[in-house]
Length: 332
Ligand code: NDP
Image (tube, rainbow, N blue to C red):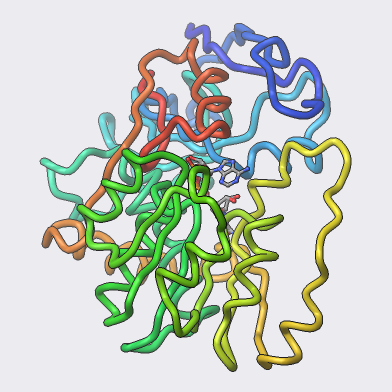
């Protein structure tokens, strides 16, 4: 018999999440049965902490529920011939060390995953965040060679891939991030221009200096004040991919801001919100493209690895505060 550890939402977040909002629980797992639903025992090896957990917890969870989330897990015991012991899968089973599955909700890592490549990347560059960058740029921004792409939260899981894919696509890339170290990293991985949005005197001026002609595509991970300033620097027929609004997730009182209509009309902009799940039917295409670029060294990956399942809440809070460079993951 296995006792799993799991983090539950003790209390709905009010403003910025606190460690006291979480509760560590122990859950006794049943033994596997022949012919039943309980065919596989898995152990989480890496768990993801993502911004969406903040707004989705309010929308989809009740207090006491196990925190939502995905993991890379190893098959420990199997009564399902499709999954051998020691196979690695991506699962969306929340913040748990172990779980039971019938296999239907598991996705094996691509069969051509190189042995030398960290499996944690299946939660980042070669996983959901990478796919978000890929489909957001191709299908929502519809970037074309020679265009200028702006991305914020640029040193994070999604943003760092957005910038690198835009470079592969022949664009000029401008990125913003919240520390000088992050800015240095963006320049190292090929961004043409990068600045620290927390220390510039004027965001408006910094954006103008980085691209005096304005922006064709804006991949918006942040929303709020940043987006309100950037929208005024879009070129005619510019496209804005509304990917995330992390600057608003912890607000108890909704922000009021300048409204989007006038700049949208004057420059005939297109602004489209999206969820990466829209392209679930093209997941394999996206993963194979990302895996190839990573293996060829054309897309660089950085991970912020927090050690220890007991540190899940701290890793999540740290990511919301901007402590991560690249993808924030927890190694059990
Ligand atoms: P990141 O790895 O980028 O981590 C979050 C980062 O956001 C922090 O490191 C921090 O970086 C930045 N940040 C935090 N608070 C603020 C703020 N108030 N203003 C500006 N930046 C802030 O996370 P992801 O790459 O996983 O996600 C990025 C965005 O994409 C999120 O908004 C997320 O919700 C969204 N998303 C949307 C998906 C979709 O399907 N639409 C799928 C996946 C993600 P810094 O130091 O630069 O401030």
